[in-house]
Length: 169
Image (cartoon, rainbow, N blue to C red; front, side):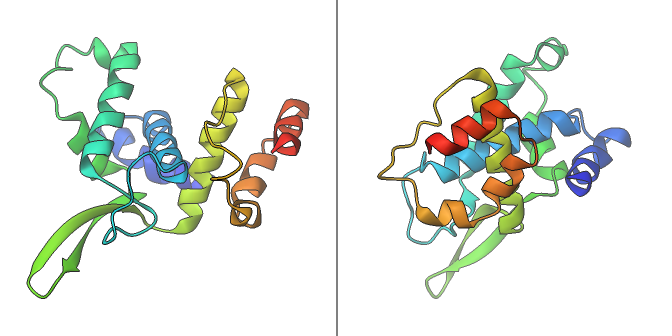
């Protein structure tokens, strides 16, 4: 957790980003959860922990619109928030992959599955705190989910309501 906070706050602290570590973590959590619940249709050539540029842009702009301090920044409509996020989050990175013998494509993926699982846990905790549904059905929930670090990360923030939510899964 400390590494994530440090990585996400570094550029903000140095004045190279307008998005704080809290902002970036919230966006990363939503992106991880989007991947987890299958919000984007599967693409055969896209890696498992990856997300499209369009999904990233949508999530960043949704966040900026919901965050008064950013929305009222005066430059909110002119500033490239997506580029700021992509250039300074250090967790979700752009990679170029081969597609066929000649062409290449860009993909954005979590640098490690542990980051992916950590941010899924953050998204789950946020939903639990609001009493919101996870939006996943038992048919789409994989047994592998419970063998991953997701449950460990959720339990690290454990309280009675979280325990009840986990047991209901």
